[in-house]
Image (cartoon, rainbow, N blue to C red):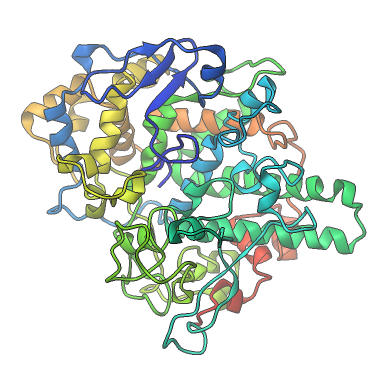
Length: 559
């Protein structure tokens, strides 16, 4: 869902503090007041993911109080106002979760469990660099003593997982299938230990859609690495050669297939041809990227509005059977990989320790292969899933997040608003004194929203009192969604578009392997020669390569 409901604190998802460069550590005080910067030792500071501030701080008079945040969150998750499907453009639903996979790549704390005497200051900083280099897939590589566990014995290919056949299932669903689940720890005295994903970032097992995309990237790497090996590439350079190709193809997908679906193309073109104007526009050669809290806490949370409440997941869970609560349940990080009546709040409940085979995704329902010329991999319109429109409404299940989705288990909080994702987003902005939308419009030299743009339309319905407050001091997250709603035609524009475009550009520039620094590189793994000659490589091409172009691999359960 782009910025996660759960965020990294070590290897967990609840970020209780932000280390903002030049300010210190902003810790959650447990109250409704902004956090006061805490002094930190050099080591303590380095052990925090490095954030920066792109705009000014909001002053007290510019922040919503708790009652206003509750009212706004409830309006954004109003059960009486169904959110329309994406209509301009029609975005395949898989891009919602590709976006969340990207978020985890940008914000992985790669040194969280590797802080020992052998980790240098340079590694501490680099391990927290927001770069689009797939460290959530590769970790610190097969040569690192902690992260070699993610790799096969050859030190080149990544481990894969095997599903668990369903008792009483048919010839397919009753059978374990290799390569369709994340690799799992599989050892330990507790089920929760055995269920843990054996990947660098356990957030990629927080919902099933992200987990299945991660599995696809494992396949993508492994297939290309195997091809290099068969061509006689030296083992000394094979892994890094494979990683470089995978990262650059991934960045190509983001620039040419993902970002144009969510950001105004004019802004993207300007940033990627002329460079950045506001965010770290001229970094030094050895300067690592930081992460603007305006991106992390607001702009890149656009994906929350794209989430559907239910999906036509596969032939077993069709007609909306892939509900959002189920996508959390059938994971090892948020859930218990087991169906009801097992209690999902109890990490030791349930009988399954690997993904049940009947929950393997049908990728044809999440990405449009017909658009790439593969009519044989199309599904009916009724089976295909598109995102919800980027606007100020969230689907109802996001008003009642499962405790596991933000690192909790057991008893829910006394205040049910704490389970509302919109309220959590708005409160996190208060904690960090995040700039308002109007402040950021001035900072980025963008035409601000008009007072009439806050009138009630198709999105969240605002009371007169709340609307008057937002006209002058609108929380940045709501503001960027409103921009997309009224001016962007379903894409981020203005403030939101500028922040996202510049952060992605910097993240590519700061990657070890970079399209920004290597502008003449072109993709070469497109399965279709015609598309390859046109330099087309999209997410469907990545999946076709990873799954060998076979329907029985893209959809092993069958039609």
